[in-house]
Image (cartoon, rainbow, N blue to C red; front, side, top):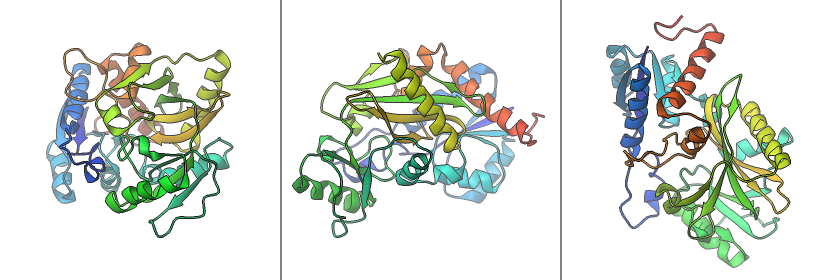
Length: 331
């Protein structure tokens, strides 16, 4: 089987560049290169392909290279393209990837999954009357990699709200999601597979500086990682059950990561699911790309790079086989 690993320049930093006065390292190529390397070690024939916005050129490239499956760690546009040309790919469908944080919260809440109360602001001239309990947390509706996030996003009084909404709506050109800030521990949980899913060890994110997981904190690997998180058995089961339910109701495919806040009573609240979660494992030999949270979880679960990526690829292969669709030379 021949696999193409897609990458797109600036995929993790494009939103942050809108609000940063300093150059930001783009590790998109190195992240994809490490994925390609891992898949080569499994034994797949692999091509690393840069995404362009020319669909005719991209389709011709895939045809000439005789690609059977695309490992897409890029973005939504690529999924639309792959679905249009009916090319099998690893990951969740456009129907879910195209939804924003609010839509996902609404779906999950409908299914009885706890999520913080929220409102949205489309501009500084269109801020609703705030019917939420302070402190609040304000973030971009379609953010990535904690783009646009620092301690100022934690709002303790109404007068601090306007500058953050202005930054998000005017500088980042996004809708601002205003949530009640759950004060407690931050955990995140990766899942791999589709029908027979595997919930990876729970990871708790601690902060070496500041009060929240800012872009700089996250992308420079400055977090204090606890994996597995130190949780009592009851809380761990509640979180794992919630994660499996989120994965199910949002129809996540092959891999994803669910972000959760625990309140002072260890009650979990669903924040977001990341369908392009970072998969890079910690490595002493190659530190060119930031470490994905799912990479820490994979190590704890007993995977190395090649076995972890192969687990995800095989999920996609089995998924297509179960829907009577073949992947290239796989039958």
